[in-house]
Amino acid sequence: PSIKEGDRRYKRSIKQRPSYVESRKTQGHWEGDTIISRKDKQALLTLVERKTGLVLIGRLNQRTASETKDMIIKLLTPFKKMVKSITFDNGMEFNYHHAIEHYLNTTVYFAEPYKSWQRG
Image 1: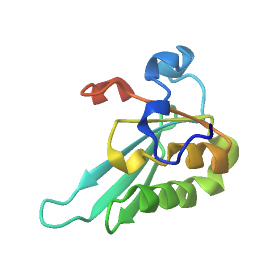
Image 2 (image 1 turned 180 degrees about the vertical axis):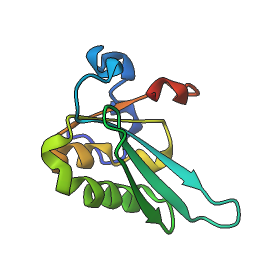
Image 3 (image 1 turned 90 degrees about the vertical axis):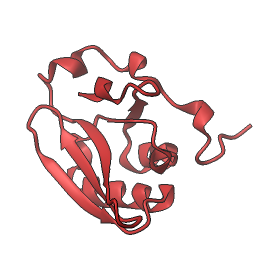
Image 4 (image 1 turned 45 degrees about the horizontal axis):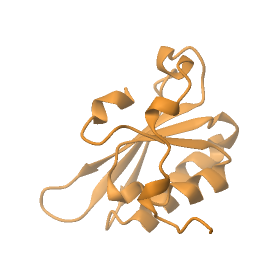
């Protein structure tokens, strides 16, 4: 059967991420997160390249999985050759990770539930 978009059962664990990513010696490994407004549903999406510290920020109006996917693709497309992996926490906004992998030709990993500190 095909993998249904947003299906949380098919997440790649951070335990599967190559150990050299943790060392920050090679470029192209990104960490993604959202910063949520207390007042409304708006949020900021942040993408940080682990070695260089390059930060990309995009504004999300609704913080839906679809909008988050579109913003990740928009922000990272200019750096597509420098996107080897992306690691997220388990927020629902990252449920379209299969589409992100497809469009950016990358691999997405997820921290273990309730252990977002594993990302870096």
